[in-house]
Amino acid sequence: MNLDSKIFVAGHRGLVGSAIERNLRARGFKNLLLRTRAELDLCSQTAVSEFFERERPEYVFIAAAKVGGIHANSTYPADFIRENLLIQTLIIDAAYRNGTKKVEMLGSSCIYPKLAPQPMKEEHLLTGTLEPTNEAYAIAKIAGIKMAQAYRAQYGFNAIALMPTNLYGPGDNFDLQNSHVLPALIRKFHDAKTSGAKSVTIWGTGTPCREFLYVDDLADAAVFLMLNYDGAEFVNVGVGHDITIRELAQMIGEVVGYRGELEFDTSRPDGAPRKLLDVSRLHALGWKAKTELREGIARTHEWYVANKT
Ligand SMILES: NC(=O)c1ccc[n+]([C@@H]2O[C@H](COP(=O)([O-])OP(=O)(O)OC[C@H]3O[C@@H](n4cnc5c(N)ncnc54)[C@H](OP(=O)(O)O)[C@@H]3O)[C@@H](O)[C@H]2O)c1
Picture (cartoon, protein in one colour):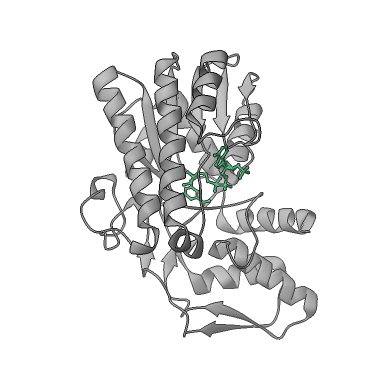
């Protein structure tokens, strides 16, 4: 990939896609191909194949997807499996048919079995039953990995896949109903500070451990792998260590400047005790995350304050 290569970032207005666009521009890539959903519906075979025939992108990042939390995943499983299968299938196939040099697809750590050993290694894929609440989404993403491997095996097509851990950062979703734990806590602590609330209530016992990767680090890894990795095996992308929800809440409280109490609502579910990715493969390839969690939270909080509506 050189600075004039024609690069399509699918989903460039999302959390991940916008960070990949920032990273590519910062590295000097000038020839970016970007389309909103209104301009190009990635679930339409006609639209996707016409776009690829006309534009013939050389490199493609698939950061477009139907994503959501437990509630959305369990309420709309048909939408999750259909839209994710369509987006990745149509893009990978059109890219192969129109001379694209390389495609990178993004999955997620929910592809691993519910009871996978910790930390989760790439070899643990398909060794056990999935978490039922997001099975439709996980099956679609596993199909994407297998499709990339099959196109490489049968056609010699250069398609790679990476599986990021929980992400957070500027552009995140701070809606209390649908957001992930880290942006939800930033918002709760910010609101509690603003309103002078005496305590903040956190769901569950606070003991589960989770891993968090700053989205600009993920984008840097995505571009690094596009430039440096041509293997059939997918690659976990994470920081390699985790933190309890209690420690996370304390850190967010400190960053936001909230001085009240933390309360834990133990009637709420905890989810899995631990979900940590093994990142040895990524480290062996020469990439490591740079942004400390406290610094990433501070930047995300700044973004929230500047952009909240
Ligand atoms: N967020 C995380 O914590 C996380 C963690 C691990 C992996 N990932 C992976 O990263 C990828 C991107 O996630 P994200 O968090 O960036 O999601 P996001 O913020 O919801 O962005 C997804 C983007 O895809 C676009 N899109 C969806 N369906 C489309 C369609 N039919 N046609 C055109 N565009 C479409 C959306 O467009 P609109 O703006 O028009 O809706 C949006 O810009 C996913 O594969 C996800 O599995 C995310």
